[in-house]
Image 1: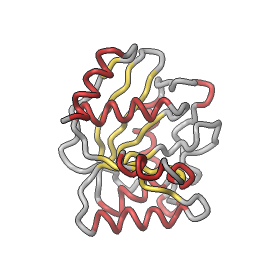
Image 2: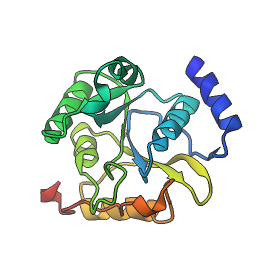
Image 3: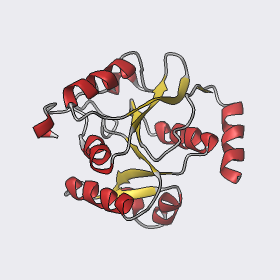
Length: 192
């Protein structure tokens, strides 16, 4: 209740507009892209809280140290040890198979920098759990943020990524120069 109230105030006072398709009606892997600034986190909270989405998000382990840890966990954070990122996929899959119900926010373009490829963990988590993928976005050119379509991945990685690329083609993050093209290192089914 308090979160929805805070998000209503945020969207009423913000220069940004919430322009969204309806919230998914089942747990989903929610992509947050383009991820070009720490302010994306505030927009993500505003979107999820306004739409009433129960979500978790993945963040680098260092964000959870000291006094920040309890706050980050209360906001839905799951720490990621970058030394062993593949372990996180297994842990998230185990939580979902164990009966936890939540949407998972993932920023596959990484750490707000000029990366060459997206990280493939979102794809593996979605395929292993049967969760669909919801395309969340920030678009500075229109000053809008929200949710796009929710898609079921087919297992044809190249075709699925073509759909994702088409959606994000005209989206620019807060810092457009840091945008990473939605492309996995290996878009063959064996490579993901």
